[in-house]
Amino acid sequence: MGQRLETEVIVIGGGMTGAGVLRDLSLRGIKAILIEQQDLGHGTSTRNHGLLHSGARYAVRDEEAAIESYRENLILKRTIPGSIEQTGGLFVKVPEDEDGYLQKWLISCENLGIPVEEIPVAQALQQEPFLTKEAQAVYRVPDGAVDCFTMVVDVVADAVKHGAKALTYHEVVEVLTEQNRVRGVRVRDVFTGEEKEISASLVVNAAGPWGAKIAQLAGIPLKMINNKGMLAIFSHRINKQVINRLRMPGDADIFVPAHNVTIFGTTGINVEDPNDFSLNRQELEGMLAEGKKLIPKINDLRLIRAFSGSRPLYQESNVADASGRNVTRGVALIDHHTRDGMDGLVTITGGKLTTFRFMAEKTVDLICEKLGVRAKCTTDQEMVPHRKADEFFKEVDMAPAAKQKLFHWAGTKAKKIESSLKEKNSNVVVCECEQVTWAEIESVLPEEGRFHLGDIRRRTRLGMGPCQGTFCNHRAAALAVEKGKTTIEEAEWALHHAVFERKKGMDVVATGETAKQLQLMETIYKVSLGFVEGDYQHV
Image (tube, rainbow, N blue to C red; front, side, top):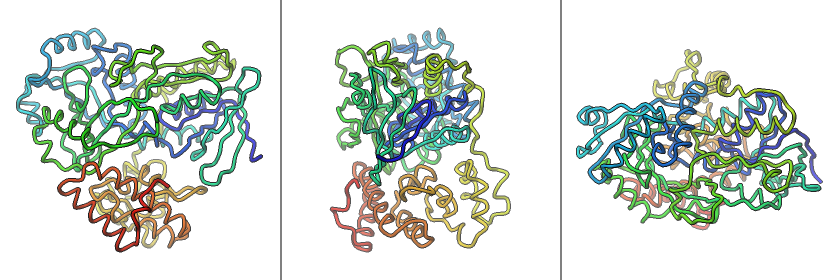
């Protein structure tokens, strides 16, 4: 038997919902440990378009989800400003869209209190040059863009600052029960195989698409719909504001600006396996054909990669819906003592990225009731320490573009990075596309655990640019070995894994310049570095 740990609450799932629950618990003074099978945000929370919903998308079909989205939109802009860009959004009616829906939508938005402003089409075209000139009506709403990568990391960091713990790369292998009560979990380190037993008064299942598996480990049936959506990334930012089709939610009708790129999507296909991140060229071509109605020159724009992730949709009924579009995006909080006679287990699922804080509040309210704790939620008021580092880097010799980018990505690591940048060679730019320095990479390396280029990417944007890590992944790995931060074996593992993941996303969009980039990547890694085809596998 390995290490034994004890806490009050165990939170399973290191996505935004689990992160929100962990932070809420810590702010209310409740001891908690978060368990995540891979890295923070590895699942659904960073496999989406990063849209901060105004609620307008769901105003007609799902009023509850629309109300929750608009309320949380305002709260998150105030409490986590460092991970949100207040872009605003446009809803655009094109000739193919139903005339009758427009009036229904306007009435619904007004009834729900979602602010909508009609703007002249000519003004919209001036603001968004790629928008179709066939637009018949344009309305502005308070949508925004979320940096999912920084948000989940910052929320967990704030929870840890307030006394919580987070175990990444630990998989739940057993839910420990005793006389119809969950008393803890057994977890396994996915790298070392070492097992730990963690006991707690209560376990929160916030595992998203993997939630049904966790419930099954406790001997409880949980009907989840894993609705996989595909998204694509353009090589540059083609729109200043979020652009939505003014119709019932469907495929390929959202363009979200994200830093210096645009994310386009999405589709909806139900899949059995939550680990199904497969990509399909035919699906992409269907998206582009639909997206052309909003952005006519879409086929002339360079795509650098595609990706997919599953939405965890909860539905009690057995009515099939292959697209998942008719399943509510509302929140599902399940007390398994009430529903299944199993005490000590709560599941929180459904919802949206935008509503994660509210989902956490509802969950922790129930936990407090069960534990007899009197403490109010304060996450709607207390700000997450945000990513504004203007007071740092004044004396650092760096290119303006690199310094500007660093202001956002430094976050709580700002002082550490500033100190490192003054050392010899620490300000060397490892990733030209995203202007990532060695100092930034060094600041996010774990004190314990395996060297992982994907984890570095999620915290610094290493390899997220047009070359998709062709040049910077092996540079980062080599520097880490040179500076004694990892072993040759670990660096080689990390490099193989990173190349596989980047190649998978590029393959499906590989035409034109991206096809040439992919050929260059394969030439460098196969010819110059000696990789073989069998190395391109998930390791």
